[in-house]
Image 1 (cartoon, rainbow, N blue to C red):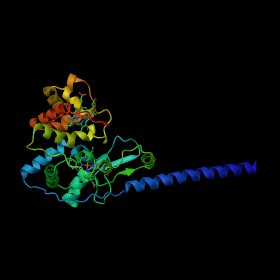
Image 2 (image 1 turned 60 degrees about the vertical axis):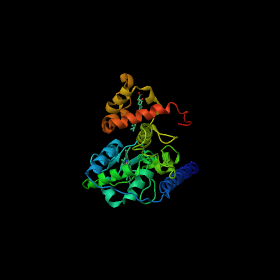
Image 3 (image 1 turned 90 degrees about the horizontal axis):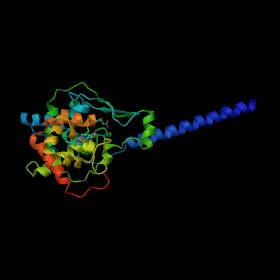
Image 4 (image 1 turned 30 degrees about the vertical axis):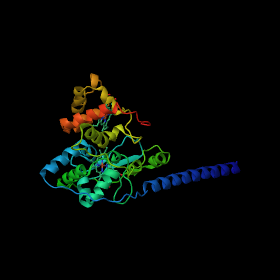
Length: 291
Ligand code: HEC
Ligand code: HEC
């Protein structure tokens, strides 16, 4: 009897020790990967001044969803990603960050997903889509945020809870945003005075890619290839962008309804027209593989 219960105790101790060792390994590995450094040099960015620039910056920030995640006054908030349990994302107070980061640091965080300390922002921040944003658009957004009153908001950091460490190491969570970006790729030109097609490409590549993805980058589940827009008539496409009501008045996912109603109503008619022209032109191009 006695030796049996000894054996049981030893067995229990070994099992507990093993569980502890595995947890420690997973924790250390997750921690190391979260601390990974990205060597992306800072590039100077001019922040223009004036009421017109600030108003345009507000419009661009609205279209690109900064308020959606960082809060109505950009004061920051805990932001629940759809990555599931074990992950707490905090979209920080931008009114404070814009005062502590230089414009070059701020724009590197937005467009390259690299924070001041050289680590990556977590994938809830769609830097892979913002990569293509032009210097002019980035400058206007910074000018607008600088014009806002400073808030006493959230400055918290992205955190993984214990279930999150395991899911991270098992590859169940999306990778850091900076890993998804080719930091040397040429940006899609803004084509402000270019053709409608080129202008539409810029808008699509720096905005719609946030959810519709591109070249294997992150993609919100169930988002279609945007060539579907070419099946729309121009009138139907305008209605989608203005009201969130799709062709045939079907019920669609709330993401698309909400971005249309709250963000894309701020597109000018020319911009919606440019997007439509671009999606139409994609029909003539050969299908991209792997997306
Ligand atoms: C879909 C949600 C979402 C949208 C849209 C979004 N952000 Fe973020 N952003 C986040 C989250 C979450 C973080 C924190 C990531 C982290 O902790 O690693 C973040 C981080 C940042 C950072 C880096 C903060 C730091 O600590 O270095 C900046 C700067 C920033 N966002 C600016 C913007 C701007 C400007 C816009 C609009 C053009 C924007 N974000 C749109 C969710 C979002
Ligand atoms: C916040 C995420 C998000 C963003 C940003 C986004 N979309 Fe979508 N979009 C979706 C989702 C999700 C669906 C799938 C809706 C469904 O089928 O229920 C969708 C579907 C669509 C459809 C197909 C609608 C249909 O008839 O089934 C079109 C067209 C479309 N999006 C255009 C755009 C354009 C253009 C942009 C950029 C200007 C954009 N989307 C940006 C999430 C997004």
